[in-house]
Length: 297
Image 1 (cartoon, one colour):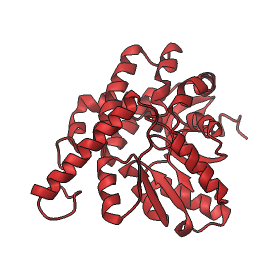
Image 2: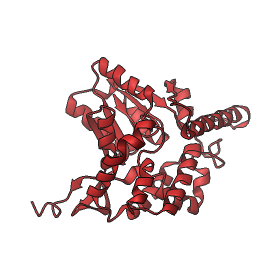
Image 3: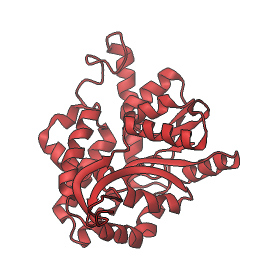
């Protein structure tokens, strides 16, 4: 069974949750934290398409370049229980135990970086995981990504793990929230969506996939997700009443512009803000040390 992390096991972005500790440690400033929070709000309400996420990824590589990996690990370890513990969905823990009780191997797949994903996986009792890895030289991020566990990358990771364990993906389940994870959902035989964005919700309804709602005790993030879902339903209703024939993801359909997955992100200023916050999860990565970092071995 394959599980996404952000908005599936925990509410919100795993890496953005560490923004304040990173700021206290001097890795980012307060203005960056505030811009990132605003960008994350827009991501929750509107989502982002693949081209937008790619732009954010490139900008985040530049922001993280030079950060000391050991320092990031220490910050995450020292604040993990305080920050991540309250964000974990009880429904996700029950889902994990349900599949484990049926003898399933539980695998966490996340676009967040290894330094963030590994301790969270341990916190929720998952031993096997794949995450984004950045190129590291002398224990510092070198400004390049070695493996991006995102989009097609998640599907590739799932296939590799299935081959390692001798599983057939056609007999596997996957749970995730984002349209960018569609390749993973299409690769398995039992896809389900959790707190899905608008595009993924529409596809799930069209294909008859289960749609799960994970909700913690009322929090600001939960209220944002419920607001997003209500907006999604309104857009879906509008599409049924007045949209031209054809799939909802057509360029001329209801997803073109507005509060859709691409609309607000055409603004370069918002892209810059989101590069700091919304996609920090995708790029705080990597423990793959290069030969030069190993002293030439």
